[in-house]
Length: 89
Image 1 (tube, one colour):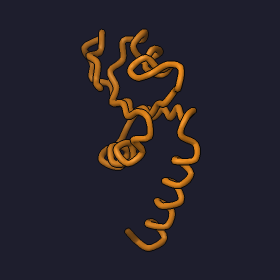
Image 2 (cartoon, rainbow, N blue to C red):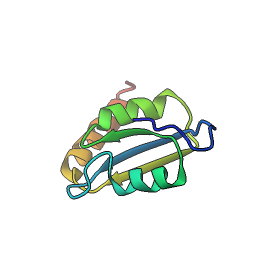
Image 3 (cartoon, rainbow, N blue to C red):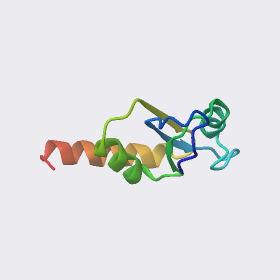
Image 4 (cartoon, helix red, strand yellow):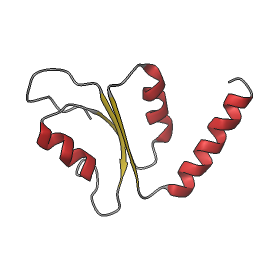
């Protein structure tokens, strides 16, 4: 999701968010950036691979990671990424 910036200036912001009580695109990170009128690229609810792909694809001015719901999945994903890096992938 990439809302238009109220300033008309493209921001370079990437977020990951999951929240069992505030579903996308209404997470606290979404709400804060929207109130500031900032555009951003978002990944939600366990989309760690998509988030990682965007993170690696280019440089970002700001990266926000609000992981409240998928802790076990995140740990597994991080172990896999560490293994891939160690193997040179």
